Amino acid sequence: MLFRSEAAPRLIVMRIGIDLGGTKIEIIALDEQGVVRLRQRVATPAGDYRQILQTVADIVTRAERETGKRGTVGVGAPGAVSTATGALKNSNTVCLNGQPLKQDLERLLSREIRLANDANCFALSEAVDGAGAGAAVVFGVILGTGVGGGIVVDGRILEGANSIAGEWGHNPLPMDAEDVPVRPCYCGRAGCVETWLSGPGFAADHAAQEGGTLTAAQIASAALAGDAAARASLQRYERRLAKALATVVNILDPQVIVLGGGLSNIEG
Image (cartoon, rainbow, N blue to C red; front, side, top):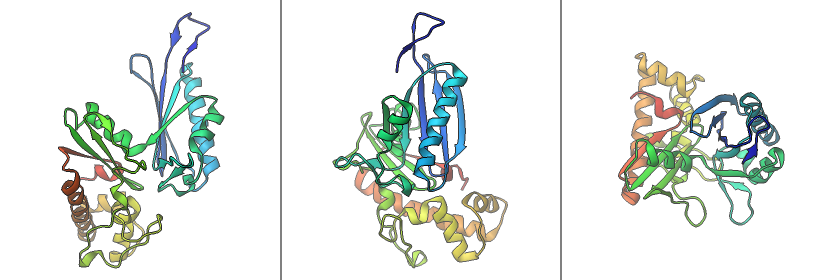
């Protein structure tokens, strides 16, 4: 969005990006030259749609107050906008499902909002100037609170007829003996890749095998410190990740697969 500053008679542009995740909401503000003017992160209100809306509106308002500029706003969120209803669907932040997220944010912020799937945003970014730069086909993977994916072909996002292209997290995990019993998924099915490879899925697997209530980050830290049980859990995770990605390779055969999300930072 453009506006004329009272202090200077020229148009000023600021671009605001929001990463709306299951555990955190992060904002970045870029000036006309693409320089980062502000970057902040807050916790995502758990299970409360109205509070999520208000939190996004508040951090945008705060960013504009601190920078002294008004900006365009783009939001990357888990899930996709239904072409039939305009509401969000397939989000692992389940309180967003069935909600008119784009329209509600536009009402709160009094401007147009660009809304896109978070994994698609990640894949496009990596294909343009990241680890997949120059590749014709890039598959971007999100391993975090949920498991998502995005496909970029020749520099363009492939969304698909139903806006679900790349959503490998709701394919069934190729099963071995160590992968039973299957787990229910919020999507209504069972045995989805996401139930094993998300952060909560990783933690649940460790708890089922070893007991306790360690988080994914705590398990990873323990594995790196030499804990045998945590190391075994990490190795199971790595095998499942390899199996799940093999199905993507067999169908898509991308030149580059880029891993993102909190679990992608774990050292093997």
